Length: 196
Image (cartoon, rainbow, N blue to C red):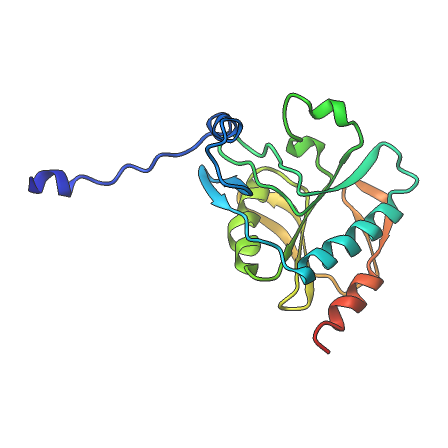
């Protein structure tokens, strides 16, 4: 009997295919996401988190108004790897709904991922950041509501980004859309005024 206890515990890693099948069969609680082969429950967003998302959507849609082929979406799952399917708070992807009827957007489809961090900021900085970098997401932002800052991560290498910068500027462009200028001043002002 002692020998059985000495054996290492085997972890079952989920693939996206198994995860999607379990979801379709109604076996998973909602909402969840697949991170590094683990099924992870998504925290229930609070009103401040949702307000940040609405404000960012408004600013991103204003910047994209001339780019009719792109859209900003909330809560979109990304087919990041065979064992990763995070549900990003915000993404900029092609505005082609029928394109994603067979599968979710892949990193090649994604121009920007934004995670809004309020109750669990380390989840987006320490768990999701390496996954997005490994999946080659070029622009990843963490709107950290606790720290009152927007962390901009660019140029993924392996499981990290070579550029991680707390953004102080009023405008920013995306690596894949350098001609688009996103006005972040209203968001920066809102962040600075939280709890004041």
